Amino acid sequence: MRRFGSSSIIRIIEYLCKYNNVNNMLTKVIEFYAKYGELIILDTGDFLIFDQNISYYIWILSGKLHLSKSAKNSKLINLVFLKSNDRLILYNSTNLIYQIKAFEQCHILILNSYLIPKLVTIYPLKSFFILKGITSYCDKIQAFSRIYFPRNVSYRIIILLLLLVKYFGYNSISGIEISLSISQDNIAQIVGTTRVTVTRIFNILQRKKCIEINSNKITIKNLIYLATILHIKNL
Image (cartoon, rainbow, N blue to C red):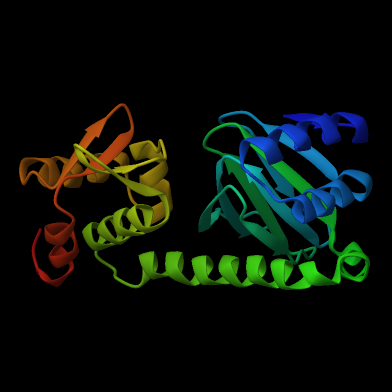
């Protein structure tokens, strides 16, 4: 994990804005973050823990990460997967711990939430941008919570795969590729089972030519069949 001063932040922001085709107004908002916030770069496997009674506004400039939470001295619970340009507010308390873990190199801007009114005052047109980001985050939280509706682990894995298709999938010659490198250990932890069970279910899906796995990269070969499995009693 690397932290940067304001001058380094501006240079990195200028590069990211140019790379991601960010407009001028958005660039000025990001520069506000550079002045009042903190830029952190997480490499693959790095993580941040928020365990203080402080609320943060977080903006993911680039990369993909996994957000989870727990009560102190208890297991982490999956909340959501996030990617570039997602924004969220972590309402912290002394009883909760949040963890952000990077799937790949991530650039994250962190701002103390009490500064949001000041940001809106300086850039009133961007209040919609902030609200839209928070709304999108809440929608994703709700979507990923569906993983835990069924008790059947097979169904949980399939719902997770469908969510990964929705938020991280793109069309290719091979099928729908998921642009997120996620291990079977990670999947087991998220759905609440063992790696052996995940491997067994993945082997069944591969035999049915429904998915293909190569070096933690998942390709969906038959999306329609994958979705219909949720209505099949036995997998």
